[in-house]
Image 1 (spheres, rainbow, N blue to C red):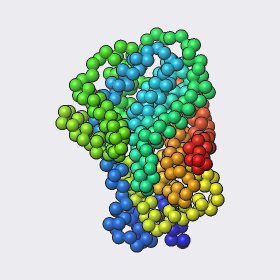
Image 2: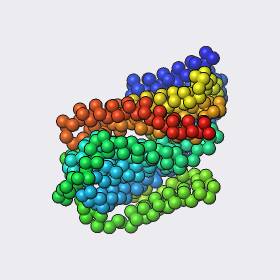
Image 3: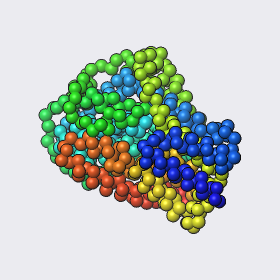
Image 4: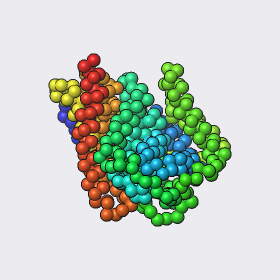
Length: 454
């Protein structure tokens, strides 16, 4: 047991050192996995490296490359422009529209790509007298919902890890749970932050809502590179999201990209209905290759947008977890959870840990680490695996609006009225930390309890 506890201590220590030194967690994890595997587990180096999740790598690289092309050729910008132009002056619909837009972009490989909507949404909120908290939560919940799509990072990590462990978890069921939960949270935000009053707001004169040029640099692979800088005003723009902007026709390359996006979604749904487990990464690579032949310039620009950082992050953590499993440390954690005595309390405990740590650290890292470590609880029986995986994943995500995370910090930084930013920090902190408790209680109660009782 001493060896297993030492390995777990090293695992936790790597997280701490990464945060302290601001070093890449995945790189440190992979190196530590090799050291622990060789020194404590006596594993051959080939067996250690075999633990690297190649299937997840293919998914992440394929999806982020495909949607990187869609960003590079301007298709994503045009879809945003057309959608906002269609809404016009129906102010009450704007938070829902930004939820859907952010969810759509977040579903395209990297959740942080959805932060491209932060500077636009906060600017629109300022111009339309919408409470910035309502708009911030619309974007935050949309990002969380889209992140669990079969084509996006949180979904890939959660159902990919579940499938590798033999748990029958449908990626569409996972996405459906995340979507419903975040829509409920959006409805709560409407009630708490004046959304219902927007029905009585008089339409305002048409105003051009411009997306700052720098903020358009947000990429699927690179996360919130532009949005996190905090500028929501200023800067030149060649993109006006005013009524009538949808009259600008899509270019042939953009039309081809839209067709490919619809084709990817249709292929995934069709293959799933046919009883075939679709390899989304391979499909994305195939469609990306077609788009690259059509528009080589955009294909070349998409290469740097591949989310290599996340590939390393997930790969390093899962490789270390594989070493922990070889040592028996994962079984040790399962036994500890079992000692709690009541499986439901053990499930609640691990979901609370996921939410609390994710509020201050990488959600991707938490999913990559906690999903495999939760497997012994499922193996012990009494807990439906699909329900625990869904609850664990969503609990780790809905806290991300905390101002201590990238998402929350970006939402505060892009609030137009600087006098509102202290309030935004306080309110987002309260919301995020309340989700640490509310999320596990609701999700374990709604998913795990029925599966356990019936």
